[in-house]
Image (cartoon, rainbow, N blue to C red; front, side, top):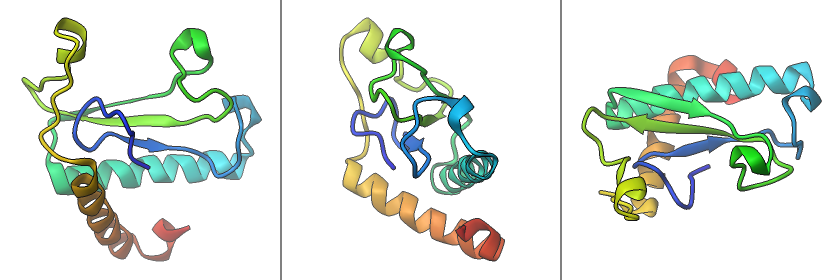
Length: 124
């Protein structure tokens, strides 16, 4: 899913289908599926946006910055050398060069290519 308040264009979130607040609560199959989705997200974003790198992470609990308590999710944030990700901190301003609906279209298209490339394994 896309982040409603993205840090950068293409900011995605990967979450388990089942609501769970903790990594320790995941079943082994869920952990494998989440890891596969993280890889698919990376490939799709590389294909569509050609970032120089990524921030991938999760926040567990309110004190750690979790905005959606009770539902584990990873953030996948494409990064470019010289990007404007510092703006919310220094200027209390967000700079996004693309509307979310356009990002959605691009990511869906790129994920479809990734799925075709990896066949049934990627479509789980």
